[in-house]
Length: 100
Image (tube, rainbow, N blue to C red):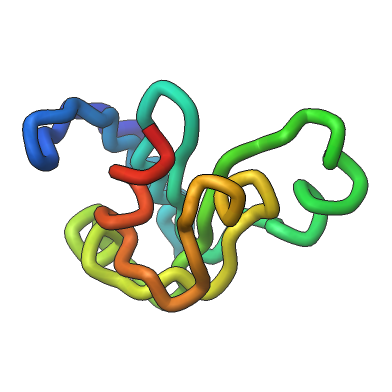
């Protein structure tokens, strides 16, 4: 099942996407320019092989819900997210605000 719903953070609207799969969930919160995602996101791939795309994204591991994703410290961020001020260890919703 796929669930999509808007969420507001400090007056800005983001889209929450949850994909329920056998034995796991894919979780994403996205804005206009960047997004945060669960551990399924391969930041190294985005930074290395897809560098020319300049993806703005962050990854949190061990999260099972959108709420946890928003409150979790990011385990890694892309180079482009770093350029906007997002850092490893930053809480997900704080990074989203910088990414948009």
